[in-house]
Length: 300
Figure 1 (cartoon, helix red, strand yellow):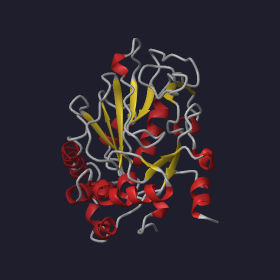
Figure 2: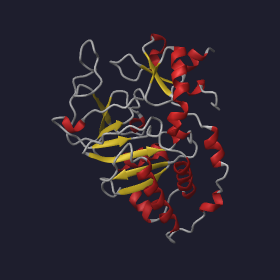
Figure 3: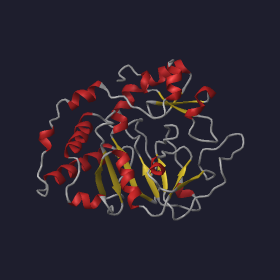
Figure 4: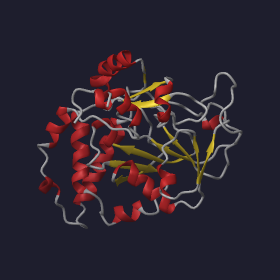
């Protein structure tokens, strides 16, 4: 199998784990995070990590309107808790992360809205839908559709639905300010993508109001204590854009060799080559999203 065929057939995004990240994990002892529930030690550690994280991502996103913070097992788990507590359904942009629908949530695509990706020939998108005002809009910034930072400018729409904002790809791009829609209810973060910590399942959720399930778990100090310590280690050692800085030259070199367009996310690229058409995520856009992680030297 050629590498081109492999990239075409690879259905999901994989991420590199830099040797310095792996080395850092070797110094972590699970026993150091054995706390007795109810004593407050675990809560204090999580509060410390929250304070570090707010500052760590502060150059990219302002979290001052989101006073509640919770640990989750990655952004995937954040979606689980959203799905099981959501009774409004949801709407989404073309090419978005499809996991909420895979969990059974009823959703529909909106396309023809101000600021959405448009076909340059027709200035239209797939369907002439309009956003519904009371149904949450799921948005990923940077976008799961192609790995680029895309702003739908929700605050400028005539109808401004509540927003669930997935920032999984923060730590995979250069430090660039993220515009948070004013109607955002929840923001998801993950350490899986930028640092290759897929198996560690590390995430944080920020909300404006107490979360229906996560707030109770936080009250009971019920989360992965060692995961909190891992996040702290990562943030103390690496800047939010450090992996992008380390891999950017490799990304550009790979994209030049394979005639790809580099995405804002360092392990993603796009191409209009019809050979990769099965990697297209937007029905009205012929950009195919390619994960170039297998082309990095330290790919495991």
